[in-house]
Amino acid sequence: MKLDFAEPFIQIAGISDLIEAYMLIDSGVKYIGFPLCLDCNKPDVSQAEAKSIISKTKDRVCPIVITYLDNAKDISDLCKYLNVDIVQIHGNISIAELSGLRKMRPHLDIIKSLVVRNNNKNNLLNSLVAYDSFVDSFITDTYDPETGASGATGKVHNWEISRQIVAESSGPVILAGGMNPANVGDAIMQVRPAGVDVHTGVEGNSGRKESRLVRRFVDEAQRAFSLFNNSR
Image (cartoon, rainbow, N blue to C red; front, side):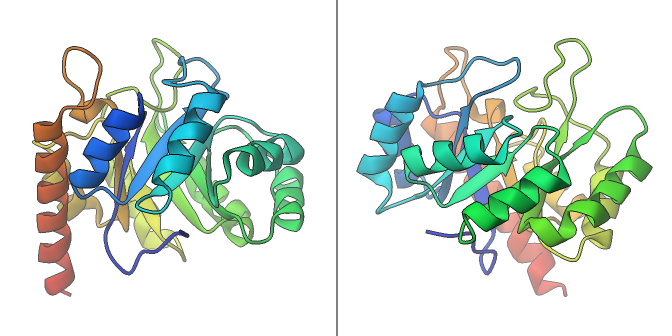
């Protein structure tokens, strides 16, 4: 599967095992994310485990590799090994490396992160323009100054900044960062993104995804997308 924004994009990231992947599929999730080669957080599964899960579920769900790698060949090799068609790049990759990745894997869909921190709105808007020709969509996320993480922080950023990025972007923008079943509807109505992504916001105390939280998140997200799509 490839990226498709004809319907609301809902991604659940951080898959622990095959059982959890099947639960997400049964809950109506179309995109599942596998964070690998990270800068500070620990991966939920190894590359070999991710490859195995993907091979067993790819006919029913669309896998996305999420990585902080910033070298075109390394990213290409990882996608080839996992057999995925979509990569979400959170690292500070250069335009030259992105261009190289496009040449190596022209059919790979690329999502580039725009991480909100402090008051960096102008920098993000500049990055939006600089990366636009080399990516298929963007994802806004939250920086955590306490851990240095720029994803899976469980923290909400200033949605007004994401709203402005959505307004300025020529392509789809996905919203991530601190969402959960209780606030995803408000987030969608305020930001008007093409999709949403959640990691820790649908996890229980055990650190695993909980079916009731996942189903509620999907239901609330779909309801909000339907409301603002019908109001256009």
